[in-house]
Image (tube, helix red, strand yellow):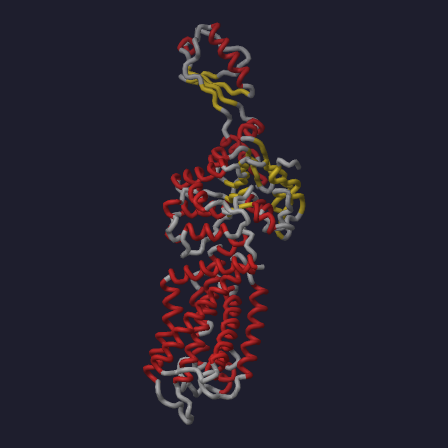
Length: 308
Length: 251
């Protein structure tokens, strides 16, 4: 563990009765990054988060959050970490600004009220009773309350589950605002696009184990997925007037030609050289597509689907 | 320490504001005892209890005072905490550094405020409409009885909240667990009698009648209610033990 590590997890195990749900989980979250714990329902995401938040002592392993042991120092941790749990209600008759202001009083160094309202885009409904807010507004109020004490670290447990696209988009915008404030964010989700959109780094948790961890790109590469290069098939190639390039696994699929590669730069160089030699110009419609997280995730789920 | 108290008071202020904003809560808690007082008064007021020279108003007015304390402290706090737990508000409080004592303390301070409002209104109406006033020099005893009753029923409210399993049943469970006892305890009807011996002895073991008797003692000369005071003390201890044992921050 270094000073740059906000969350440090090594060999984390958790059992409920005789059932072990976490079988030795390891990951680190650095200060200032958005880290996403991605996985299907029942993978152990919420359990992991509850341990990091100090709500459950782990069965085994080492856990440090902001340099603290969450199970032993929960009060200290809560002054510096904001938590958005799943399905946490509000006092029904409280008004938005009034509630945020009350929450601010719980912390030694709260953020200014107006600032909080702005970050979560609730300034217009500041005098509305909480029970009249929409689902998306409530979730953003969750963020505001978690942020009231100006925490160094924010936990978000499945922040957009069950939301319509518009509510999700505004929720993501609020999370982007948190990132801009320099907060370290640890979020869980079972939505791939959410992880891809928000996270600097991702760990895929499945059946109580980390399957893969790294940046979106690293995760995809490590899962063995290749960059896809495609271009519009030149008519000379389609008619068989030019030879296929050497050393590239190019397949001509009618109007589109496609190849996959682990080294995009090298392959592109070869392709363009081949095009020049055969007077094919700059290759119309040339596109390089990075490996997508969705492909990685689906591949993992397909190949290892049996130990869930 | 001062910070904890300050936080508890802020919490209580939000609870009070929420309480008065919620029309149904406020109406039932506040207007219910007053309405019952007027109805019972219209039926009885002014005569002596059979075979005594005790005016019935000095019995049913403090009886309704006891009822108000129970609604404000027991029903209100009990169902409130059950709903807060069910809605996950208690769970959310646990994610903050707010000391548990300040939070529970805030709920209790707010409950005490509600009791004061309800009791003052009921007492005033009893005086203005039926001329029922505490005996000279008994105001302190009345206050002491109200304090003891509030502590006892707030504790029992916290205890019952742990038994309630859903937000929907919170109000009904809280009411149903005391209203029948209140009726057979004679809280509403000063001439209520004719219970089988075993039943009236059973009813006397509950704190409902005990609180009514303690408050009635401040209005009319009666034997010193030593047993009833002890009863309230025992129920407070039992309620506190159960509340602490079963208290949960999440449903």
